[in-house]
Length: 413
Image (tube, rainbow, N blue to C red; front, side, top):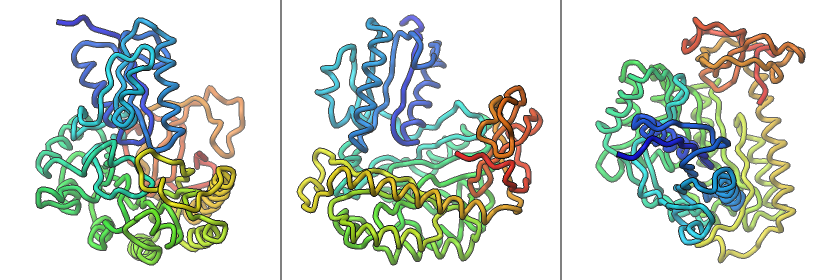
């Protein structure tokens, strides 16, 4: 039997990666190993990588080099999307002892460090092959476990004491499509599962977000009024170049449907800046379209070429300085949209799930002066994803409380 080791991990990229890393570390700890911080001296370093952008790949290389500097004698295992598409490059890096692609990962996994909120991987892979995206090459075709297998994993999460579960995947809306099941059927079954108080859908493509799913969330026991719906571009011309499976009219209709049945719902969108064909004229269309939508905030990404993708063959390349300029302007718009959403919720009472972690720094709290670090605070999220704070109370940790949203209890990210 191998001797117990000190093991450290660094995760780059999406919440899916975080769920997978957490699941792996939990199993390694159960085998008698000690999990330590990535900046500590360890016998084994695990780097779970991302390939969504060139910046993400650079961070992966830096994490590998950092691990080798900290302990040149340690084993370094590199896994994930960048490991899948750049295995030979990574194998040549000093200290790397093993490179594992995504086919080595478990289909169902969940994070476990925070007993209040858990990320639950229910699906992997993607069949869409958008022209800018390397993820289908890194994670393979869409696949998922059966509903019953997924429910068994959800029961284990419930038994662990988690109160809120965030359903994650590469393309969650395609759950079950290869075994005659579907995403809505899974949601209905999960909603009937006792023990888990709240669910969030981490992301779902607009063409897969049916009216039936929207209506179900609006009237369900535990699914929250919080949607993350990738947009990527607010121009039909650019959406066509991306090979996205919807247009701006369909996207608008989905948001309007949500707001018609859940007026206080939080809606986030992924937007890519500087994709091929996004001239200044097209970008103005993007800004006008997003500004006209009831979006609560944006996740903005700057386009970068991905090896093997169809976008490399497209013309109308946007200069990198212009890409960064477009990114900055979208971030400004996001701040404006988020403020509008927060302001619309002031004075309303929403259910908040308080986290168990005790925080000593009040620096992000409006109305709380600096220099009062000895006061303990706890944080929590409303059902529609506004982060609030209150003085720490151990009896409230892991519980849901109705709270009035006021400027002084909002945590500004």
